[in-house]
Image 1 (tube, rainbow, N blue to C red):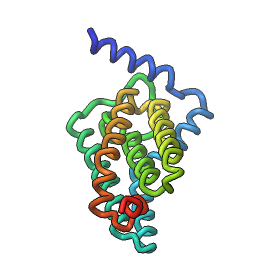
Image 2: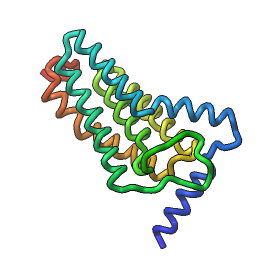
Image 3: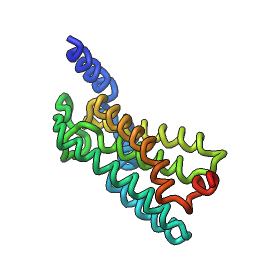
Image 4: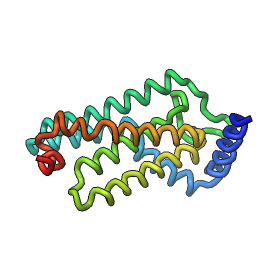
Length: 188
């Protein structure tokens, strides 16, 4: 009975957010989806790591890349292990190729943006940067439901895993690799 209630809630939220037939919403959703595209974020991660390396913060760059890449890899492994089917209630408004749970866009955006906010923002701006990162990830995740390619629970699962991954790994990665990071320097 409880499972049926969750499925009904998933379906109700999905139907309320689906953007089909509303071109302006579809465009906005596609923009936010692009900002959470795992390949885009991985590429941006390498660019930021290269920039950090060039600025003499190579160890820190390696630590950030490991948090981002390993987290993304674990999310992809979950997709194959769980193998949840994508919604078929409405036409998908973007092309998708993998299973549904967890949302790779929600996971990748939470890991990428929150990691950068917590690791690179000056201390006095860290909370604001983290709030902005979480907000951006929320918009990325909502876009996936709007485009009809994820259930809301897929997105919530992606956000949850991404947040947990960053909270569990960022500080240890900074301690291990981050003697040249601003956070580690302040702790010394």
